[in-house]
Image (cartoon, rainbow, N blue to C red; front, side, top):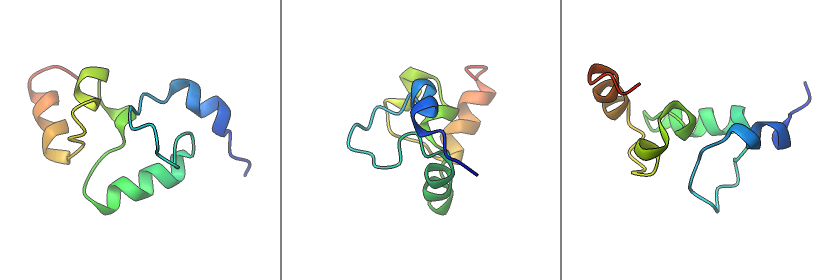
Length: 67
């Protein structure tokens, strides 16, 4: 399977600029899941910028109706 890195980057809202995984969704997802996190694209922009990508933060946002 061919990675569509440049196409993926168009929709990537990750604000961590030095990230080497930007646009490489399979690597990004694997990296975050190992730490019980979701990638930034699972969060609205204002929540993504907090860098709290924990499952708990995601669940809180869902319960608050923000996602």
